Length: 400
Image 1 (cartoon, rainbow, N blue to C red):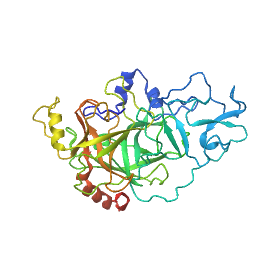
Image 2: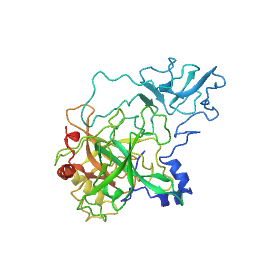
Image 3: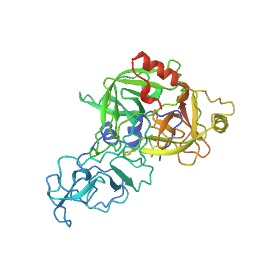
Image 4: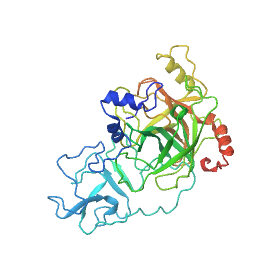
């Protein structure tokens, strides 16, 4: 479950490693790392079952089958159109990884069994995939998003050299959203004053490479931070990342819509997503699988009164560059979710969403009657359009 830390939404690498007693290398493995030998997302599975070897050896007690990703098996144990159903909480099969199935020898395929295309291909921005892409997970009691559910979601990574090693590592910085194949919007506090970023689109489970469609990494060519961004109180906390090369639109990678200037989304039921911590304290853990929470947008007068009852005090004034969402117990965004999108339904269009906010800050994590604070995207639509024009990029990609 996601929560939001007061005014601190960056992933502070050294603080985290100290609090957790981990080295930087261990942290890299925990967040946006890959463990190819024993990939173990946070799931409940029988611990004594061993995965089959890649060489095709059988699994004891199962005949002559071997564990392979479900989309490489064509023996009828999964749907050949790729629409598998995977329970990430109760893995009753013999395979260690929840994406694997026990496939008869000789039935493995080197080529993925790709899903049958939908009869009508969706075009345009903001299409939400509530049932996932290629497979659907069940047992997602910890707010896990479906695979490909939010195809605009990206991870913003910072290249860093660890302990004198010349090889650069990708360190998770914050979340973001694709609004164009070559543009990501995120929070200014995530990227201001820093360099050497890349983005990762199409990510879901950060500790496996077995997903049906690959993620896509792109280097950031330039960053434009809003000229009136004020780091002290996070006013106008928005930035645009322009990529060196565009991402490829795929089943798990697409763009989100942006609301017209001045759009009001009060009382809408919206989604926030991210890989941030599940608690504000040191025992909180960063997420392996992308999480989602549904939140109501809270009118600003009600939000301001709620925030005045916190340590902000009775004279607190909510800046016009913010909107609020949440206030429900144990449902919030948190440390590490900074820059991630808050998306709200587009009226009259089924499963189509616009980005109403960017995760900014909050008081505590998931406190009852204390909403979280988000960048008001509808206030910055004209500015975003202007920056796109300066880069000779079209704006139709995020219009609806």
